[in-house]
Image 1 (tube, rainbow over the protein chains, first blue to last red):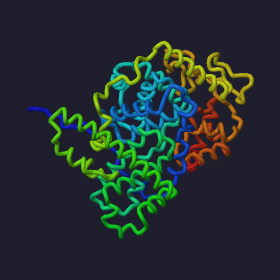
Image 2: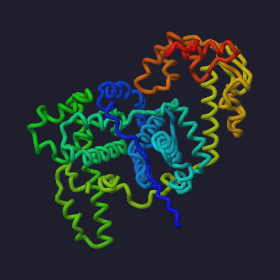
Image 3: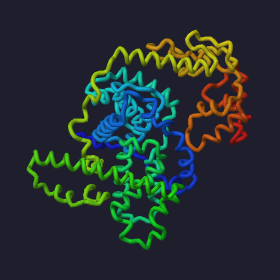
Image 4: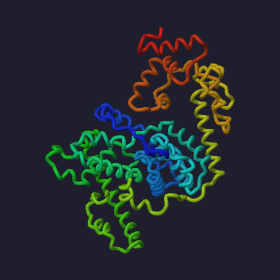
Length: 297
Length: 164
């Protein structure tokens, strides 16, 4: 007789709780407390002298890649960036320690959000062993102190379900919309211009950009009543103009990111199999800022 | 996350394993770490009116500290449980705050673990019934056995009235 272990190596997640998602008080509480977890200052204008915005982008990019490769939960990366920004807003940091800080922030965010968190050893390997696990653990304590142990920060991801459920969206498109929204949120987290925006605004703007990008709003306009933006603004008590501006900003960042990505893809494809890739031609035709329908396949 | 790969496609160019900003100055890093810890400890000393290095209350503090035998507290709070690498860590186990003066809202905010919608509620509780908080919180006042019963009865009494 052979014994087989059929236990799967799956991660068990709690199902979305309709009691929490359907209750207005939860959303209102999130909106009330979210500002507490914003970085105190736009730290490139004062606190930081050695670190420049492009370095934040570098470390953010690296963190996102690590999170992707390790298949972290979606909120780990935005949460880690929240820690990073809050730390940098109060502690002048040297460029050479920025990656250590990024690793510490991922370490903390992963421990808070995941059933199987990233290990210190793994994170150190991702820095190409430029830091040691012992250093990671030591600085974990320092970062925790500076964050006053307030780790359960509100992230844009916390709002996704609340917003999506309050919109008349086709059931079959929900998964796709969620995915796009999560992608936009991650994109925003890599860009310092969004660091001072309240999470609810980033979430609302991302939902707006996702729906527009998928052109779900034009397909059946009658069901929206108010325009999409008005409805979104109402859900998270955001001013319509501010929300519009935020959504446009997301679309601009998305466009430039797509453009850069395409260029790199082109280079890669040219190297791999010549310039006649099919996906490439399709992508070249996309000219609208939010034409992400091709992207998410 | 596959959508990330495409939209944020310009990111994943090359291996994720890489050193971004050159070598780390280990000595300097260690110095900064020690300095940061020292600062944190000083801040804590100031806030709690307790010298955590000498293990003594400060003269100027707002708190009245009272010694509690290590055997009477949870193992978690005994100094032997703390990391041996850090002998200077607070030996809070031995001494507990007896009574705390109500603090101003600013410093209060720091103490409250801003766990969501409870925050304002907790703040209220704290201001109205500081005693109860002491008895149910982690830093339990536990000087003698009757105190313990009192505290326990208060906790159980709330929902059921059956603890008496």
